[in-house]
Amino acid sequence: MSDQQVDNSKRRFLLIATGIAGAVAGAGVATPFIASFFPSERAKAAGAPVELDISKLELGQQVTTEWRGKPVWVVKRTPEMLANLPKLDSKLTDPTSADSEQPEYCNNAARSIKPEIWVALGVCTHLGCSPTFRPDLAPADLGSDWLGGFYCPCHGSKFDLAGRVYSGVPAPKNLVIPPHKYITEARLLIGDDK
Image (tube, rainbow, N blue to C red; front, side):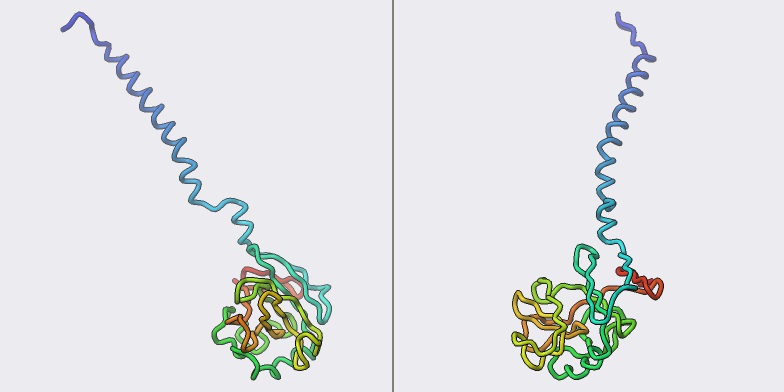
């Protein structure tokens, strides 16, 4: 043996202490990295379903809410508005909504669960502008055959009161119908249909 005696207990203590310190440091570095794989509370809230009270919605009125950072329109259509929908089929690109994004339960002429209540994303399918609600009949700027609907001022796309796009405009598809369901007769849940 040499002049210096090796203290094995001190060496063991130093190895264990170094190992523990390394493990704590590794956990400290790994925690934010692993946490980044999970969505933040803000991100969860942005994608969460939105509940809307439609009890005070009047005939012919539109309300707007927000879901996933996009405007969602809810329109209470009048019997006249519903009666006008079939009259426009010949002027539309996709009158049966065969090439449109919508839940299966809205794959009907009114594109809705209940004919009088219509729900859609308020985003033009051309470049993402937000069209304006134009329920007026035959206005000077939209022509004598206009039976109400939505007009996109950005590039002139027109949609009827079921969100179906007119032929010959820049928008390629009908407005998107988000998943939704009725919780009660007066409460609508947008973003969840299960």
